[in-house]
Length: 198
Image 1 (cartoon, one colour):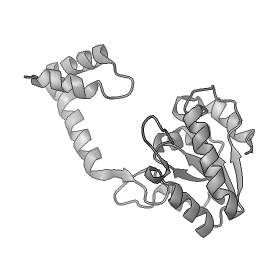
Image 2 (cartoon, rainbow, N blue to C red; image 1 turned 60 degrees about the vertical axis):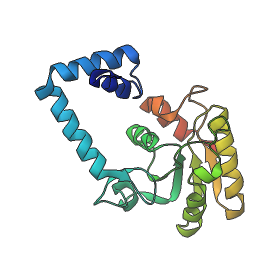
Image 3 (cartoon, rainbow, N blue to C red; image 1 turned 120 degrees about the horizontal axis):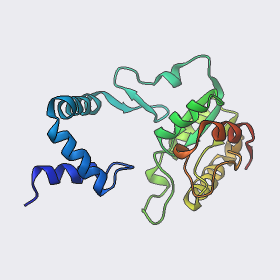
């Protein structure tokens, strides 16, 4: 039978950046300092669970009473330019670069035969709908530079071909086999400013 501390360690070890040892140290610290660490964490998790959701338009993170999100409703942003990313976290990374002033579309992942993630599991249909409905003139594909990212970009370019929209991709200033979320703001700024046709 797994005890409560082991169960806590097991849950924490599933978080990105926390290995088995780090999760064990974190679990012990939480249990040891209930008032200072454990209770505030439990409260924050409950609030996030009940209030945070994905924007119905772009797929980014928002709160339940702001849907569409602030990025989708900001009238100062260029609605003719749409940046397609894999995950909502990628939007946060690109926003921190300060180089992009258009709108976003998170696919919810990338094509991956190994993980059995096909086009039907991602937000491609919504992407085409937005391009047509919102009058988008350029789609910037800001996806990973690994094999699955290349396949995702290729598929997106193919389904957008009939819409007449210009399709570009981030310049390859990003390291190979790397994701947007792991890039620094300067690298992202250079990649966005140096984007190229697909």
